[in-house]
Image (cartoon, rainbow, N blue to C red):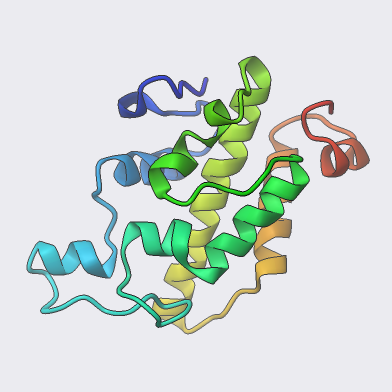
Length: 165
């Protein structure tokens, strides 16, 4: 299902293709961030992160450095009873293995992380293209709900202890 041993082949069969495609693009530095678009000559210069406007929009900025991503990743770390979240996109993609998850728990954690990254990107696109702002709380609730729907779980077990659900 989710193979995290080789980042060239990360894929979760039980996630929608759009989520897997996003992960593939992130692994290969092909996501259409302002930074990548400027490097390809599609736009004249990079633009700031749409969430915070503090730094240029790069993949690491959106998914690892920006306050929006940091807060969501902290929520996931608390939910899964982990320490501080990783500080780079590369580490986020390997977070399950770095946390010593294996088997079904690794697959489930990767699915949550991939869904998180997709939700951040989706919220970024809504902000850039539709001027719709999302909240950290709503984004986390969406990630949590989508993860639960992938398995037949008791909601209370899923919310409080996903590894034992």
